[in-house]
Image 1 (cartoon, rainbow, N blue to C red):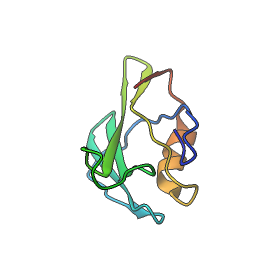
Image 2: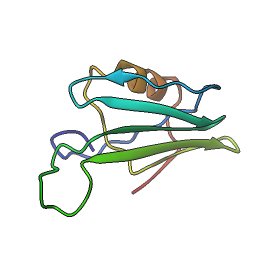
Image 3: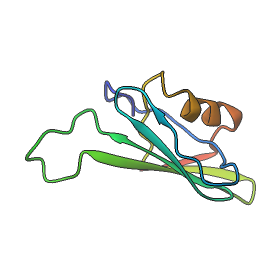
Image 4: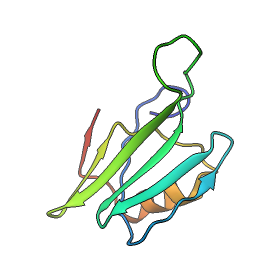
Amino acid sequence: MDSSGKEINLGKSASSGQKIAMHDSRKTTIVDVAPGLWLWRLEHPRWRPGLGWDPIVTSTCVTSGGETLVIDPLAPDEEATEVWARIDRRRPTRSAG
């Protein structure tokens, strides 16, 4: 979902090696976990103190068996170019969350 709350479909496969990149005002962090598995973290735009959950949320992307799945995708700002480049290189075939 984007910062306005609109749902979107995201995805991309991981590159090899550990890479952490900071982007945009919400500080999007990318972590390559393993080949075919990466995630991005950012502050949820609707988070406020007292809601009972952490402000930083994680979206996960996994590619296996020719399928790309994104789990709990939250769209970063347009300035998070590395996340969007990964999404543009390989569109998801499934989304959950």
